[in-house]
Image (cartoon, rainbow, N blue to C red; front, side, top):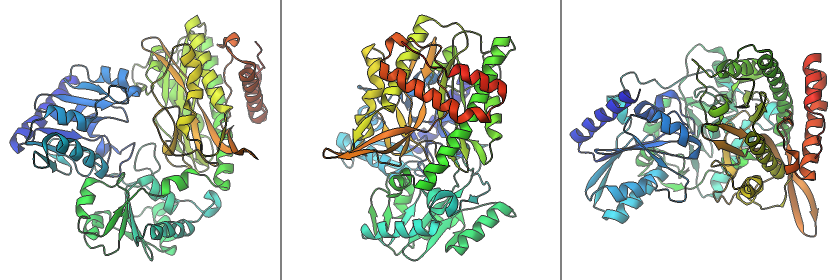
Length: 601
């Protein structure tokens, strides 16, 4: 495949010479700034062969580079081999961003082209700032060319269209009418009279709708305009789909006007309201359309609102994690029994089995991301892609890691378990124990209101740091309610983020450790922020663990653990058994009883 991608880079350079472009920036996202774009916008993958979720390309006449973070360093090294594309590491102390690199490597008068539909206004402004600082206001040229790869990508996928269903107030705790009234209040607070929404997760949350236009994401490709007296949804869907037609009827009854997707940009030229626009999600091309429109650029209020789950969503998510835990326990019992019996099972077969067990749960709407089913060295890639063909066999020794989750009408789940398949090395046991200690220490945290996730991140890393070990990815991300498995604005990571953790937020807790060519370890639970106490020193918060799936104690070096950590682990495993046992068949129940017996130092 490397030769194929090298040829594609060559064809792009031919086009660049013809058009007088010195560099092309290819964004890894879509017109809506999505983390996971639909196939039509897998431009980085098409050009380079890199399949990670986070990556941007820069092609000049003599250099091709991929910018991505530590989750994909090992993966990108393999996928870029022979393509001539060089890895540029991001989120490292000595990292050089794309704008900085272009400013240092181009000459005055250079032209930089990009797809204005898939570059956010904020990203383009960063380019402008860097180039202007290097060459002056007239020393460079930016060229927006929407869908610029169309000329090369002959079989480029079309914009997807799937069924749309809606969620009632009883199911999610708040009607779309109430959400829209809330948003109108926020719009007026910004002294505006309308807001344009580009983020697909925000649109889905606000309208209480779900689709499947993007694999593993319950979103609908669309734009939304909310004014003080109207709601206009620009969306194209297939005709004669009863589910969608029923949803559209529901929306129209609630005052939502359904308009063709293709009319959006044309209508934006004629908007007379003062618009509120989020520059983080609005594309550069949209900003050009809105140049003559009265507007205010400011962050959307929706991400924070949807991150704080209401009581109905919290209760529903708790039930969801119990059902998901049953599927996980059935899977782990099946896997261990099969491997111990000597019956061959590979990574892909294990992944398929897990998805099939989730599919048996009422309200299942698909996996929340592609299962990471990784044995041995494969688990050293944090975002390993399990091969469908010739997948590695899971052998009766070493560690197996599975990171997975599901979308249900009752919520979204995300869980990682690393389990022993047989005999382990001392190093595997040490790494397993240190990572688990970090997860437990964060789970036990108590902290004053106003604390941000970046201030707690050290709790998950400290056991690893004390042993001179570390991991490159974040420790925690927000999790949506039948929405994105990754959401903000909160997170738990070293990068400075001022957003405090608030009661009702659900985040992941997933420290890890990865040894290239050997093994990887990650333990992940979902945790809910809740109030802990109030006294003369202030309000204190803590975490409740929502995930209900046992943590294997066999690999533990208990001498490395504190008494509090062991007590937490014993209490958690006991809770898992008490919660799930009566809903499991006798064989799986007996196996889980053994797996959850208390341990001591």
